[in-house]
Image (cartoon, rainbow over all chains, first blue to last red; front, top):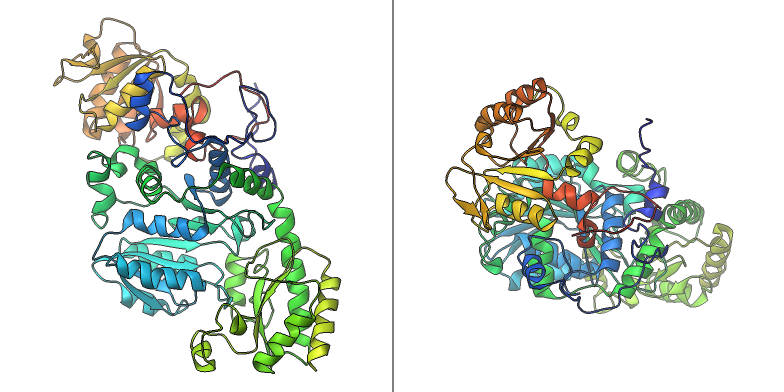
Length: 429
Length: 162
């Protein structure tokens, strides 16, 4: 008998992973299980589900078959053992940390991160009595020397938002693992089509699924993916390895092995924090992922074309796109992002705040809003929106100039995007 | 082990073992917090004839517990082991002696000597895999909890169990 086929292609998995036909009805599309709860077969089944002895549906704050399909799809594409979805990327990120941290612990994070993450880390971690150090993302010695006895995790973004810096994931994994520390990477800007951090040694990957994975800008969502290979019983993580008081003394890592961290993330952190995804959002986001590889190819080729146009324009002071041949990050891009450096980047207008406002007001194809990763091209002027409370000096400290513009390049025709920018830049001059 | 463990993690062998009805769980504990208890109970709930083997227990979930494989009065297809790796060679010899067809070693139960004994006796081996997880991957509901079953198929299946 011939060997059964094993389908491994990325495009195939983006469409099929997690969503086999419904065995009861034959529905080919993923059914939307819009329900809060599930009827148990009998009392014994109910007890087995709550004891985690069997995989069974209990309550939609903890699990839902439509969300499960999305989770498996994302886990499959990232090459993880599984995934847990959340209401948003920030909820996913917080829960991922909450699962492994306790008061008195310490986190080391790259300094160039999404502003929402910086705020979350600075203030929420402090309220949890967790210490935090930010280090220069590309200074490996700084990461190494930031390690303390109570350090539990290194955190960074594959492609930094909005700075565009590229993380040396393999080197960081080596430093973290030498000390028995987990490496957690936000892969929102790259998506698993451009980079799979777990293959470079990361232990946990987080996503704002809202962005390129969904791609349509209709639904918020977040996800945490784990490799299943990190040794949570190495002595540094009693909160995962030791009996859990929040689950009648269960030892998650010993009992569930490679699934231990994710089981704890779901059955304690998702249960207790309550930031669950809606089944309808899960349906829309999983639908979006079906076209992820097609969209990302177009996002990248458009971003490269627009960045090259801007880099050659006399109206622009600097373009911070790692995909440009002149970028300092080219060696890291070639290693980690051979298919492209994503589609979100910043450029600086020499005319400061006024020029930024003028550019925005004269664009008609770019949508002026605070999001990235939509199929539509998006633009924002941080100095007058997300960072408007800051002085020019404070902006400079955050790596943002008064004339900095952030764009998220969509999948329209590159020539139309360039035409829109050309007109608006002409209006400033 | 000299060969890569994946040699003893073949999906075809795993599926064949999962389709056998009678499983002895060596080292099954009555403590509900132990993995052996979780797994044995799960297998019972999913229709397998589970036989606990543990000299320190009389019965688990109402099933009589036998001190060794050789004391079991009925046929065993799969021997699933939750013991220290050093105990595996003797268990493998007994598995051969009672005519079992598969030796399944749970997470971390890795014994080159035990596998060699079992294979020399005609058994197929599965090493460093959890029988509950593999059942849940191929025949159960693992995908409900967002785990990656790595199964790609557009075929409609008849039904699914827990």
